[in-house]
Length: 168
Image (tube, rainbow, N blue to C red; front, side):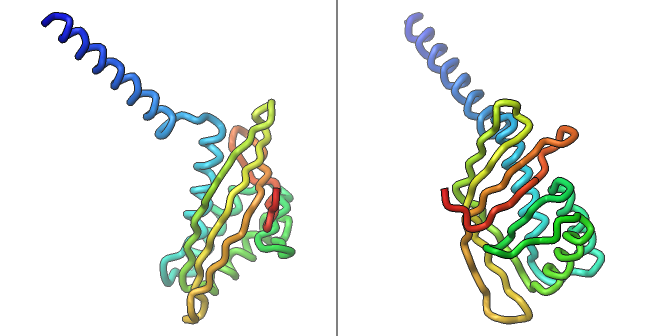
C-alpha cells in the first residue's frame, strides 16, 4: 500500500514538472525568439482596423507603428512596392493608407525566427494573409511570404529590412 502512495507521488511530481516545462516554453520561455514573435504580433495589432476610426487614432497608431522600425529601414510591404526609408515619411504613408481602409485583418502563419550567434540580429520568415475592405467595396484578400531582418537597438528588437514575396 505504501508503494502505491509513492507511485502516485512520483506520477504527480512528474506531471507538475511537465506542466512547468510546457508553461515555460509556451507562456514565458523562448528568449529572444519569443521576444521577436511578440514584437511582430504587436505590430500586427497596430495595423489591424475593425471599423471607422478618427484621424487622432490614425496618427496615434502611426506613431506606434514606426517605433517597430530601425532608422532608415528598407520596407518592401508588397512585391516591388516600398515605403519611404525615413520614419516621418513612413508614418505619413501609414496614416494615408490606414485612412483609406474600412477594415483590415492580418493573420501570421509559419513564423520562424533564427538568431545570429551574437543574438543582436535575427531573421524571421512567415506567411501573412491580409483581408481588407476599402471604400465600402468588396473584401480583398492576399497571402504573401515575408522575410524580416531584425536588429536589437537599445535592448529592443527593431525591423531593419522587410522583403515581400520571399522564396527560400
